[in-house]
Image 1: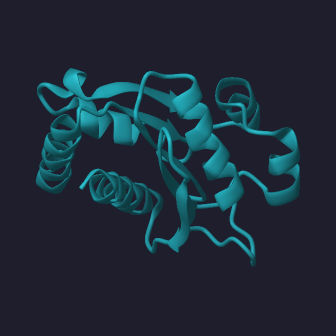
Image 2: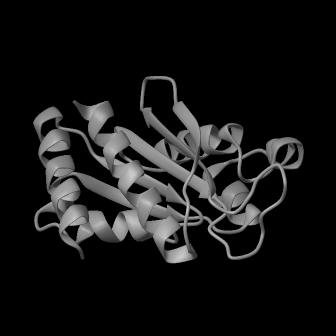
Length: 161
């Protein structure tokens, strides 16, 4: 793992441990990279509960209780979907905080409304509302995915601060 991700993960671990919180991840286009970055940190079992890789819409519905109506109306890459992904991750885990990601990493799959690099992220505390945002990350697939992981970790750190 690169130094930036290792540093962010270590900082995240300290922030979560200080609050006594556990983390769950719900990932689509990052394919488990956030969970990988977290579990590369020694001692992460003290603050990381589990990760869900829900790449398909069916997996989002079956594992995270995302509504088929939400997917039909807004699409997988939407703030509505990542809101529901965080809620599902918390429902199906022992975590206190969750992060969810859904996006278009490319090289294909983009559209005029949602070009390659469009990503929706959400963070939620177990007894709070989700914070969601839509961002655009430039570059090739690997670069886009890495930028998403950084943004996701930074968002959890901010929530735990």
